[in-house]
Length: 334
Ligand code: NAI
Ligand code: MG
Image (cartoon, rainbow, N blue to C red; front, side, top):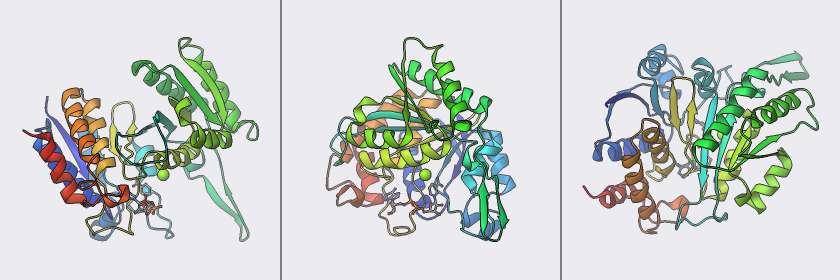
């Protein structure tokens, strides 16, 4: 089956890595047709909006999108594009698989966990105000509905992927009401999955455990802010932000994007590692049931990452964005 997908190159390193990911997808004849749409600073400068209506319409029509990172200008009252997208399409589950890849130098060993981050509420809902000139408030909003569906997503994912353990990460000892509701609701959902072992871990302890013994985690279900922070921590375990993919999933729309940002420090220098976005594309192939293509790309990617001459500088390699992708395509054969 052919799928039309929305392609958002984004800002900074976004267009560079998106171009390479499309090369790989086209090389394997992935059953996609591509509709490019703008978002980010580039859209603000050329179309007058960070997230133009035409881009939203494209995603709504195609229901599948791959997105490069976007820069949200600080100040000027701009709302984060990612937060807007997630709220607009109710992409409530942010799924971030974190795995040590064979032959990629990193500090963690045998890490294989998935962070399931609630994506629409918590402190990221943008309920903020200046009380007066010297005092600001950000409201942490947690609902039963939001907690129930993210916990259910996490347990169902665990079941579907033959995982045995779910950890609920929270801070209910301090935020007794908001995190208390999240914890209580998640534990309730967990009772429907007796074959899966549930534990709850307080977020600061979770950080320590993830650094010292990450192998104990399989699926982590957590709130928006904790999930954001834990994702980067876990990326650090397995080789950095250049390698960790993600998906934003709603009831009928899914947007695939790397965990990392637009990396202005290396933008336009052909240095960025396309692995994270390529693995996000692999998640998209899996999402539409193209398992064989997903496997083939992963195999070629892993082989290429094992070659220090091919891999990019963030992984201590001698390759660049384009030559690394050349090597992946070579390893794919065909
Ligand atoms: P960042 O993730 O862009 O960069 C952090 C560090 O990781 C930098 O040193 C960067 O060079 C490196 N890095 C990131 N991706 C890499 C890759 N693929 N290959 C090699 N090195 C890589 O985070 P930062 O600097 O905090 O944010 C920069 C901008 O990105 C901000 O405007 C922020 O709002 C935006 N951002 C966008 C996201 C998105 O669109 N999904 C997510 C996170 C941040
Ligand atoms: Mg983040």
